[in-house]
Length: 525
Image (tube, rainbow, N blue to C red):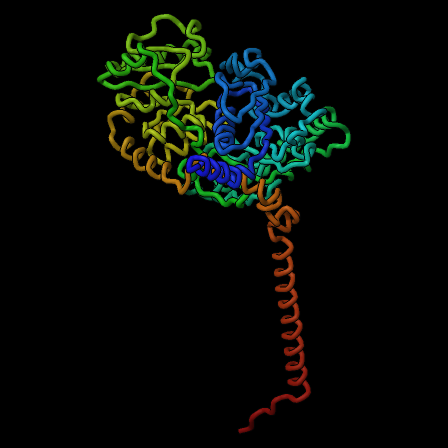
């Protein structure tokens, strides 16, 4: 009887638990074929699954092993996408501008995936038992995916895998202050002078215009094609966003004003899992008693595609820093030139967290992707940054300002500059000391990032999509900027000046008139 009562008590607690009652069915649509973008989604989705919610994830990256409360639906073959093949030097420096590459590969082109059979099935026959309670998708260059929230009549939450793009602020009423929120590669997160603020303002305005001009009509047409002609344009759909979770932290990305609808969860993906180092790699790292450097340009950029002259300079620099060893991640090792220095080990796949945690690591050579910077900050490893495009220059510049990194330009890369950078980060204790201090600040959070993400998503589920919405959305841009108020104040000031002028002129006129009518008598001797 005692055991029966105990069992009844456990069941009662489970049934009456708020988490159990509020368990939701969540749709996650991950539109991009980029592994680095998916990693953040995966961390958030697994956090929701661990919290008892059922998540259905439409993506290019199905789980290798089943995960409780997590259902995969594949929307394409990753082996057939540009992301898997890798971005080559020629593509990066081809006829397209980087803006065109980001808008096309990150926005307009992925929107065409709405025609995939699995997504069409979802659009035409969404589940009803139970129906979806919330939609999560990406805040990037493609707003077409926001249509799922409107289509399913549920709240819409987005994830930004990098610092929030400037054109994502207005739809949620997030304040945008170009005086100290830098959008330029040569800006600053600590202090911008007049010319930096001037340039930053112009660049921000132009980027907002470019994005709206280059995506609105194209993506609106795609939405109407796949969801139906009744669906509004993407500019209206953007205002459905109830919450944005952003992959940033003020230590790396600077202080900026935000509404409660923008929540920073930078570093949520950093988790030491049960991945085991390959035996030969573990031995190589342990034997690197003089220290080693980890060198990678992430999952997309092909180092091996760079010009032979650049690779020759790299080889010379790698050889010169011996006995320090170098571990390099290369997408296609067979495409590298011959005569790789003896102190270099190349691999196609490397468990990055395990490597960054290793006692013998001395520095991290990186292109400056947000995830890599957060990982190196977590484990306090100094950085040698060689940014290529997108947010990478800004990420590395921010690290340089914090004095935890040395920055190199890949266009003018030389062996001499590389060796100088290695000597600075490895042998100057300032970089390590600064990194350790910043790491402590980065890791000091009131809640775990997993709990933070779950809390705010559940907040929207409990209290509705308008619960964090800014009143700024009901105002025009000139009302938000208080131009009407300042105009009223200026008008009132001018009226007061005008009235004062009239009064003064009237008084002077009376004085002159009085002097003419009643002249002052002349004194006689």
